[in-house]
Image 1 (cartoon, rainbow, N blue to C red):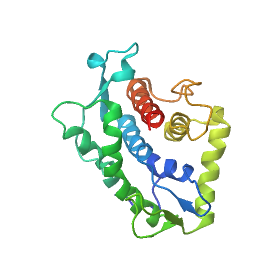
Image 2 (cartoon, one colour):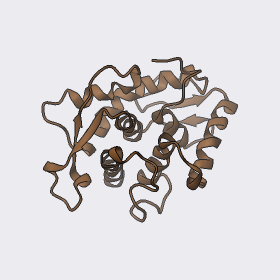
Image 3 (cartoon, rainbow, N blue to C red):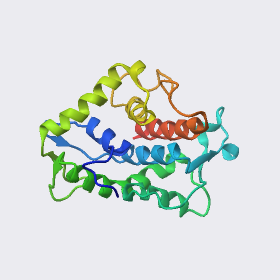
Image 4 (cartoon, rainbow, N blue to C red):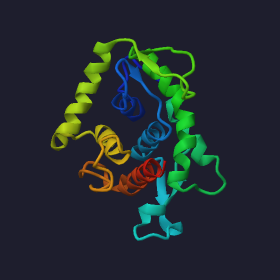
Length: 211
């Protein structure tokens, strides 16, 4: 993994910052960080969807994830790829979100510690403990960028920032939005990636509304 202090934050890191639920703490999530990792892979052209197994109206509703490039990613956080590629039959998108998140969380934790955002609390990412924010200024500096993008989506040109916005919209973080708006909020993803990203976001919406 590249040095977290100089690299661009991953989608998983950014979405975790936006999922803050208590003052001074970040709480682990069982679905969204893994979805962020999968979107990173999609934007790199490493995974696609196979809609042939779908039986609902739109192929992305019930598509399977297919690995088209399993070469090393250069990022330990994207070990989520191994969870997908290890399956003999390509998995349905929504079914792989939790195991992918299990693979991503330990690396996400290390990246946030290295970036100076959080400090160790002992049990994370088991779900029993939370991450304490170590440097509020570092946390707020990045979160303000994401919050501005979320408030002014028309200003967004980076598909990775766009992914954070769409993940928030589809996991029910902002109550009242899930089910009322389109899966993808803007025309900000490369055309070749839209189907697989839509499938990932639909999986997030399905899992968040069924819990």
